[in-house]
Length: 371
Image 1 (cartoon, helix red, strand yellow):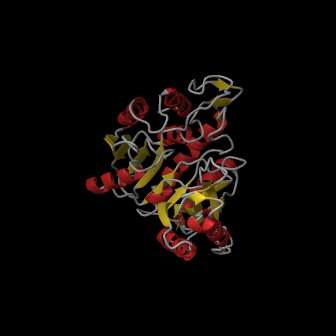
Image 2 (cartoon, rainbow, N blue to C red):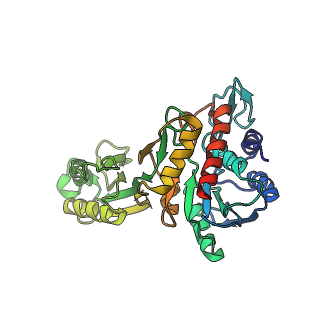
Image 3 (cartoon, rainbow, N blue to C red):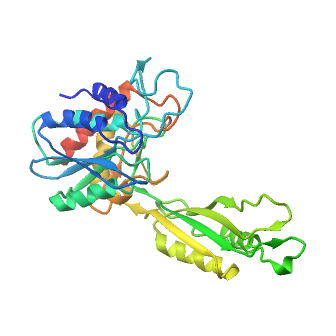
């Protein structure tokens, strides 16, 4: 059987700063092939968002088809590590390395949890582009699955969801995300002759004030309130005596399942153009909100967590976006993984004991899915 620590170390040592290609997938394929998986690796996309390598591994069986989804790309290491960020070194019971938590550790744990002999149908949906634009990652994998007729009944995503102790939280939904870029054109001129110019900053500030005052909702049973944040304001005017010719702003909205991304873009466009009819707005929807209602799948995962840790996991929809936003369109999708305290940080690390405990939890999920 695969050892979770050994595989996690090998994955950490493989170059995979997003977008990941090549060696990290070689490591994963070498672990899956002896277990009887058919491994399909493919690379798609062009710059600037590609090319991206993805891996779809499938193994037959009978009964419920369980998919595990994850990513092997990582964010850049940054400066200030105690050792090499790609050494996979174990010190004082902790495995250090970029991706140890997010999320090579969980990928290794799931592979290690797979029974040697086939039981239920299993799939691994693994992308090399979750930390980046995610244009040619999981969405491309979903298209590939449709082409090949791969249709899981349940999907477990190995994102690091635990907050304080392994097993204290799983995610049954996520808020949606949309970014909006606003450009307000004006007419450049001398500040002493404002009647000969048109200052774009004035309507931009007015529209942003109105947008900032919008209350989208007050939250609901499963989601916190949606929020709009101004994330950038730019004029780029080096002169003190010039009225600028244009002004820009950027907004980010995190929204719950009471909204759709396109409707939010339309709503803010209407506000903006009341103040500046010629304002140009571009919206990019990263993902819609989703919710997997509590039911048999989340209960199955909760039972496996409780059996290993004695903890009753909280069902949550907090945090940022994940690729579960795409996978949730296929089947009931739940996220559960390691402690998230050090993800993306210097000296990212996972407790070796937690890595093995997660392996046993994932094994418990597989067993329960086949019961």
